[in-house]
Amino acid sequence: MPRPATRPHPHARRASAFALLLALLPALTIASQPRDAPAAVDALDQQIATRMQEGGMVGMAAMIVIDGQVRWTGSHGWADRERGIAFTPDTVMNIASISKTVTGAAMMRAVEDGLLELDRDINAYLPFAVTNPAFPDVPITLRQLATHTSSLEDRGDAYATGYHYGGDSPVTLAAFLADYFDATTGADPARNFAPHAPGTHHAYSNIGAALAGYIVERATGEPLPDYTRRVLFAPLGMDSTVWRLADVPPERQARLYVRQMGLAIPLPWYGLATYPDGGVRSSVNDLGRFFLALLGGGAHDGRRILGEASAREMLRLQFDAAHHPANLDPASRNSGLFWSTKLGATLVGHGGSDPGLKTEMLFDPAEGVGIVLFTNTSVCSDGMKPFVDLLGDLRSYARSLKGTPPVQ
Figure 1 (cartoon, one colour):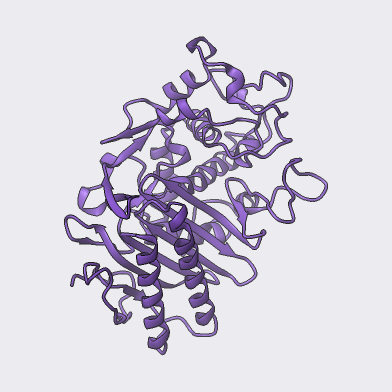
Figure 2 (tube, rainbow, N blue to C red; figure 1 turned 60 degrees about the horizontal axis):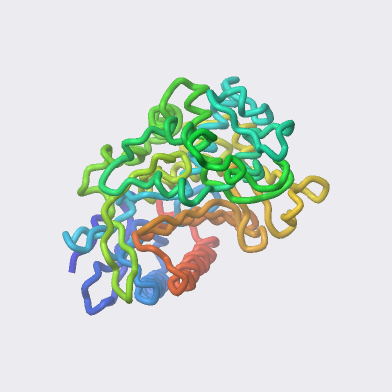
């Protein structure tokens, strides 16, 4: 039975595993664990296998960070079932909407460098107009794009055309957005906007994130993939993280699966014209470095990607009792800049869902515990509970590590 290679932590021990799905899946590989907790690791192994079977997940990898340190990484199942390639913490796959946090960090870097202003009318940066026709005198700002309060709405029929199966999208981000907001194409401009003034209503918008990424490109003079490689990925040693499908060797990239009638059906890889809202391809190990840098005030392992003030502003909860969208109670739900709270505002981070995958990157400020979790299988309504339960299992295991020293 194949087992993924153990790379990140040379002193780690491998956990024993039990068979799953008639012994077809590779067992859990533990890349980092406490020295004295084999029973807890075995229990986690069994919990992960059970959740994967319940949710029909083909492969997964996860990381636990505690108080700014990686304390555990592990993986289970297949990155590519048909070719017998095991999933590992170094497997690369789409991270979907977690990509918005990368776009947010790039935006904050451009703000820090004096190229952008969070509260300026975005039309100052665009070659086409983006204005809610019901409120023509109310400007839309980057801060509103990043908190999903811009009044922009995803026009589903047009937005869906941004997915390109079989490779990277041949349509550029600039061309897609120019067409999307072009009233002469026959689309009713009002369909792009909610009937609320910018800044007064919270509504999640992918197109708003794509627009923010395009504004970063306009301000920096670089495509977002190149800019983020230079100022974010390379400084952190995120050598496996890219935006373009063509930049990932096929043997490194997870196959994606969608569940249909109890079966996991492989999908072709795909790219997005609106890549700033969901196009990053990364591994658990790479994304963990980015996560720790943001949680660490803009730096990790001595490598800085943002100033402390910029990192704090990105993670700062933007709403309070006196200032919040009318449809949002900040005590139970809040937002950073392309970050959000979950579970009654007890966790902060971002998740991602796209055809063939589900991802989460979450932090518990009270406990100092963060979780990164990837699965290369669509999580449908009947699979959401096992996925959420798996997150809970990882958080419980993290609590058991809190009182133990890291492996040296």
